[in-house]
Length: 388
Ligand SMILES: *Cc1c(COP(=O)(O)O)cnc(C)c1O
Image 1 (cartoon, protein in one colour):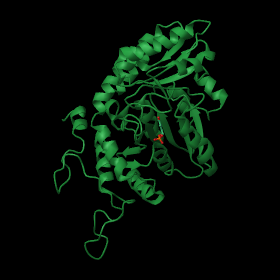
Image 2: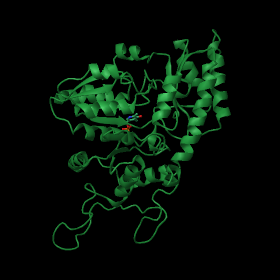
Image 3: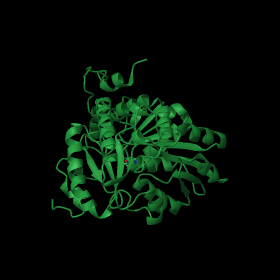
Image 4: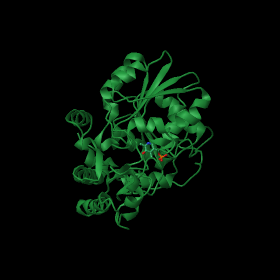
């Protein structure tokens, strides 16, 4: 079987039947002329289907080990489309530690349509079991979660869902199919913010969904076409291009993340480091039983919460910005940005304190990045903080 890194390096290679173009062509066409009377074409209108989008959709489906792929205008558009599989009266169990925008979708949009949600720590299967109701129709998890990097067992969730006839959904943004393929564990739906590691260069917003089950694929095809939040051909091409270097980027980024996590652990200004690669042995073991690495996202907590602003403003190489998965190391303050919409009580229970910072570790030379962190933390660990 061809290895994943080989597949990635050759994404889109010579797939154009007309020319053999090594880089797949971009079909900037809204519509396609019919060959005769009737709807006999493969392609007839680009919301329904576009050749560049098909290329990306087939590629992500293959990488995830599924049968059907879907490309959306954003990760949130993908999540919204998945949620349209559910109807008023349905209940979902959702990881309590997850992307802020997903939390907002459940609490501020889907709630209006009488789709109810219980947020629980899905890393604890007993909590999941306790939350089931007669109308529970779906479980959505993030593993590792955002921003606390908790690890949920894909197998336990999948088994539980199968037993109770519940649709299982995994946000695989942090891992990508290079590290983790949830469909292999019997998960029904896997999705991504392709904006992050898959695109990899902070130059495109994208959402991707992959399923194996034909019944779900049929419904998603209908929803995608009917609600229309498709990814444009130019953006599909950018994502395909990003995928070619995914293995290289991920390898480097997670190697860097491990080094940075270890150096943060040893710094006196830091009270906690959250990264599967430095977590308890049982967590590491679970992570490596369902993926081939720990990824490149980590969070840490400053002992003195008041120093966050000064720390962030002091960085030379680390960018303070609200995204992840690109080649550049970025730092986020979840309380201020990504998780601002999560109620304070829930945030604190999860450990998302005012002193928590999330880092997307990039592809730079790790020594440079570690040095930048150390310089800022050294400043922060002095009680009388020196000006930047
Ligand atoms: C960014 C992100 C999303 C949302 O994706 P967009 O492309 O920004 O719409 C969903 N889940 C996770 C884990 C993310 O990081």
